[in-house]
Amino acid sequence: MIHTFLSHSKVILLLAFPVIIENILQVLLGTTDTYFAGKLAPEAIAAIGSVNLVMNIFIAFITAISVGASAIIARYIGLKELKKAKVSMQQAIILACSIGLVLGLLSFIVAKPLLLLLGTETNVLKYAIPYFYTVGIPCVFLSLMMILSSTLRSMGDTKTPMIAAVVANLLNMILNYVLIFGLFNIPALGIVGAGLATTLSRIVAVSILIFKLYHGNRIIKFQLRDRWILDKKVFLSILGIGMPAGIEKLIMRAGQMVYGSVILSLGTSAYVAHNIAGTIESYSYLPAMGFGIAAATLVGQSLGAKNVQLAKQYGLVANILSTIVMILIGLFFFTTAPILASLFTNDMEIQSLVVNVLRIIALFQPFLSITNVIASALQGAGDTKFPMYATLMGVWGIRVVFGYLFAVIFNLGLVGIWLAYSLDILLRGLLLMYRFLRGKWYTTIMLE
Image (cartoon, rainbow, N blue to C red; front, side, top):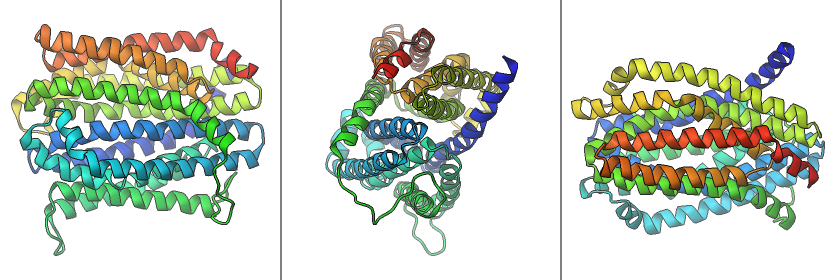
């Protein structure tokens, strides 16, 4: 038993560690924008938060392709059917380009109406619209970055996406400072500079990922001379598995927009505090996301090799490792909350709100691990519908309803929003673990 646990842990850590580093750096892209924007005005932080609510809706559509392609590619690799794996990769890239261009066009057309729909205040809107244009219109690069990284991970290559993230983040930090405040005879661009820095960094990341897929020693390679046509069967397979995962993200993001509007109604200070706490909290997701991606890859490959028991073991061991890390993060958040809050703002009212929220966040870290790792393991197996139903119940049945009840009716303000969030994570985590332990996910897949 111990030998099996240690053996599985080694395999999982080799996959998860580069993903964790990559995820830290990906979040750092947004954190860097938030940090430097805070030097302009508190409204600039609120603007980035408003835009990210919409961008997260866009990411839901990209996620549908990413999850579907990853599950299929990993399964074909487990079956040693590399030609089919390559066709699946091509379809994912075609879909990524298509959806990225469509979302970019929507960003140009509906940026202002969407932000107004969220209840963005006029003093925030003047920062939000130009930032939205600079990160939303070139959305195709975000789409490609997510799909190409996901494709490489499904092959077991988690290092290349990490390297791309390292380079992109170093560039982003430099460009943020240069473009926002103006250096080397470059005029100060303010919030537009923050958006341009993020977009240029994504372009560089995509270039690195394509180069590695084209020239690297990979299981399947990116070749421009290949026949690039839409394969209806693979296309439908990707969407069949991926759409529930995409809808799950859409449910999540739509819910965030609704209770984001509630938070906006609490005032600018509450919304700024919410975004600062959310930015800090996003780092706590990263280990769970890394272990989740490792679990999804290994579960998918194990099922492809017809080894159900191994798939289940990988999912559980990945969650145990993730939970240990998340508990440590929770302790760190609880004890250092005042210091973390002071890094983002000097406003004492906002700092106090951030500290209260961070200490709530610290308490539900173990269940946050389950909602990420076990959900990813189920998705890697192709069972994407149950996580979608669980998210629908949790976000709309608990987070939105109880968030309004606690924040407005019981007058708990921002703390009430995050108490509802905690209740959602707790119940959803228990449901997902029950599903995984019950085993219907692999029984269904193996019969298909």
